[in-house]
Image (cartoon, rainbow, N blue to C red; front, side, top):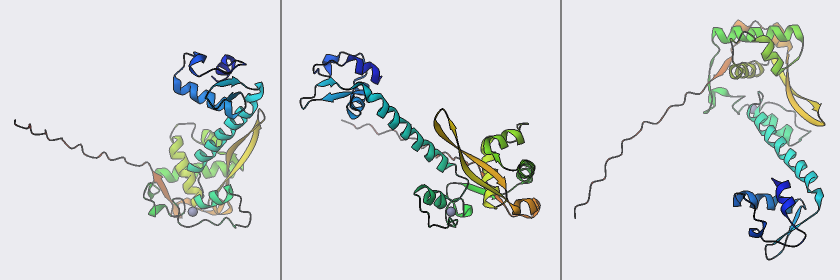
Length: 234
Ligand SMILES: [Zn+2]
């Protein structure tokens, strides 16, 4: 879209209307705004646009990638299996911090969490967690995605449930989950790896008190019937 608008701009100033592009005016405005921000267009005080320098693309792509990476980091934070506060402190780069779990967030104190519903692990949960521990004891550390695929190839556990089980094991300190990176087409991709802890190797799962997040039950508010407004008599 930006390239289209850029190609349409002339060496002399033209108004937005004169560009005569069959675009949603809002889309055109956004495109012009971005081109101006990255030097692809200049705008006069009277609101006329002139073509700028052709190298607008590099800074634009760099900014777009940066924003996409920020969004991904936010998604990872939402799904973080560890203490929220530790993740925040790490994000803001406090090197002095001991990275001790805070004891208050939805990860540290799931029973007090209002949004998530936690329950003592069922026998099914425990059987699935035992399979996760066995896979990690056998293979060392594994990328979380691969751990899921290898352990539940039979489809007995879906991905969301798997993440809840993983978080529960992490909370109980039976596994560790860390972030790692690899490079793909010049970009740094962040992913998670899981490994078993010493406690995880030694523990017998039946004896560990462990709670698992259950899918939230969304209750619908009862629909109130609107009373018909009384007709006013004239
Ligand atoms: Zn915490």
